[in-house]
Length: 395
Ligand SMILES: *Cc1c(COP(=O)(O)O)cnc(C)c1O
Image 1 (spheres, helix red, strand yellow):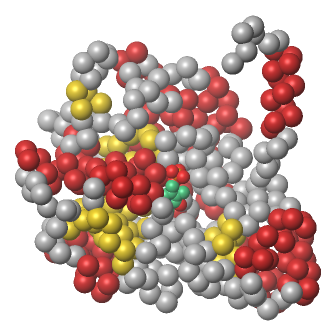
Image 2 (image 1 turned 180 degrees about the vertical axis):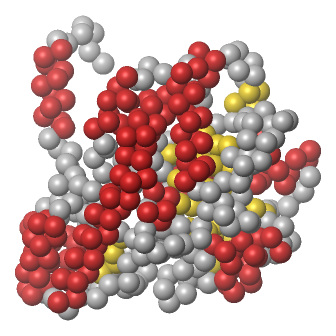
């Protein structure tokens, strides 16, 4: 570190240079994040110093967080039940703003574990959860951190979790199931209603990872049952910083009732509040303000338009790719496309080096994975397909 401070000018000229090394979202077809909405950015700036780790000091930011949780609860069909004794929240929906899907997934599983092992119960048992093979890598972190075994169920031919495979993996040490509503690689939605049946029959928790799909599925033409409407669902992860168009870091974890969230509490001796149920301590109030602002500004209508736009791009991409002879692995459910191309790893590399397109690859089978986000345009897609055609013609 330098002994004397540098001038503002020196620092900002350096920052601008460095920023040019970042990829701006133009030509990014691999990310589930996008340029945040202007309104979210302004609200974020207004609450830049707010720390939701110490709720008593930031009552305004905390109010915004609660309003966001309420709006997300409504979006995800929570059942309203007045709960007089609930400490973390008064009505049945409850939750908090996390740093993203990873933290939400970790905390959902931590709550399952805490409830099952309360008072020293089941000491010595290696507990497990059953997740789809398509689960996000955050579940590897769960396994590693919590000493829980993460069992992976097979997928069916449409990349949905296979219910029989899930059932066959449930044993006496299973504490919960995970379903994905909008999986990261294929954008597919697991059969949440069937998972719910299994969860209820076996008295298991059911966490739905809708980190990406939470701001997509409610606005699709085709209905999917994936949220608190499904009786066995106990928690949901939904990320405002993906299709919610909020700023990073904005994730959210919602629980069906305060019972689950209370299991996460630890005492906080020197803060304005007595306990804390979050994973991180100090956390951003700016995220709450940004998410509140963009949700209020867009409303359901705005998000519906956003999803329609991305789905139109998706349909255009699939149609024109087919004309070039490239088939998708599945008919896209949301704005994620897995495209069968010859030698996908090489194609990916050449798309980047020759034409600056950022795309990614699905693990199994290997295919070109494209996410059509609000920053992409119809013109981009035409250019992309021309470049893809040039590259594959030379292979
Ligand atoms: C993006 C994603 C995550 C991880 O979210 P982060 O915000 O990156 O922590 C988890 N699950 C799914 C399905 C996702 O798409």
